[in-house]
Amino acid sequence: MQPVQRPFLALFLRLLATAVLTTLIMLVKYTAESGVAFAEILFWRQAPTVILILGWLALRGQISRLRTRRLPIHARRAFLGLTGMCFTFGAPILLPLAESTTLGFTTPIFAVILSALVLREKVGPVRWLAVALGFAGVLIIAQPGQSHIPAFGAFVGLGAGFMVALISIQVRDLGRTEESISIVFWFAALSSPILALILPFVISAHTPWQWFLLLSCGVLGCIGQLLLTASLRYGQVATVIVMDYTALIWATLYGWLVWEQLPPAATWLGAPAIIAAGAVIVWREHRLNQRTPPATASAGE
Image (cartoon, rainbow, N blue to C red; front, top):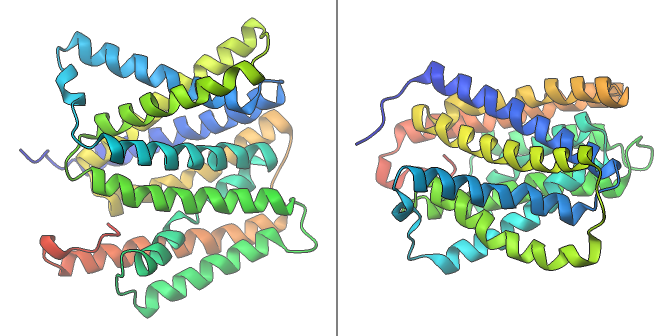
């Protein structure tokens, strides 16, 4: 049975998810600066998700919800997802929080490009103009040759936006046959052993405070993913995705409170262009999907 649409609840859940995931990214940056190896942070981001989902489903007698016939596809998604995590969590370590968050907003822009190149979808002039506007915003922020941010950090930030767009295509394909909780579980279950193989080479002794930070990363990551899933249960993508841009508010606040950093003028000029481009793309795809029968709806929804 199709869940009842509750748009205001969906918006609230998405707003809460954005706050939780931005807090997670702040903690990743803070934990890395405290001396914990990046690979170990990634491991503790994933491992608690496996335990939490298994425990929750076991209490409800619903372990069978994790059954799948598409394990190879889940494995490919785990590989891409792990690569995406390296970019997504690497960017805030290399860049100030506000800049890394803003570059992550390029996901809808890359989604349009991938839709045209990979899915062979027809992309009209409105979305191509939005892509151009978005990359103009990126150039304003990055300022090649004279930027306050390192070129490699900008590359990683853009890589995060690209990988999220690429992964979204695969998750959308998995979503045809798999439950959201199954997709989240198998990603964590398949990527955790890979990260565990690296641990002996990077692990070190931690203070109680560092252990608290690591476990907090895992718990917040699981909660954030579940909130994202719940927001899509009660509302459409085009309705709730606008809440994602509130991440810039949280990132700016954390950057000021924790690192005493405020974004420079270039970021305030470039961010609106990137956000406007993403909003135009989402609005345009929503309009196209309203005109298109469900069987042939744009894959960008």
